[in-house]
Length: 127
Image (cartoon, rainbow, N blue to C red; front, side):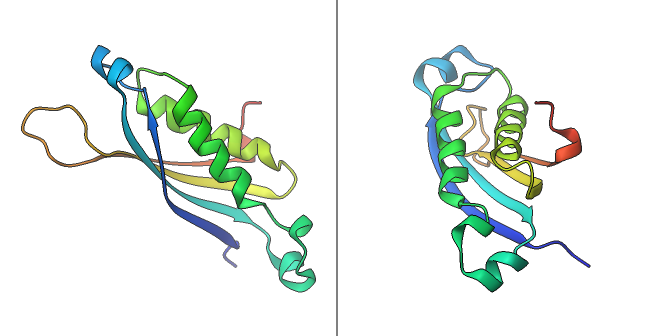
């Protein structure tokens, strides 16, 4: 049986993570898509916010982390976001699948996107 999920797509924020000095000074746009594994049966029956994950808090964690943290690697940024999300509700949130997109990487002759796709469970949560 597949777990229930809450999907959040297109969470955008401006941040200063990147290996190059200009990325840390000028910043750039990042976009995040989340899939949060959580049992939604109780919420589906009760219609009570207390029985689910308030996804407004998840969105705020993503945006605040991108805006306030500065790492060399987007892999580190993705890991920190995932850990903070898992700590949001350690009892109910089973796993996070996070896709972090660097929308305009400063790479010559490259107009695409860089996407980091990670899957973390409570077992992998370090704090």
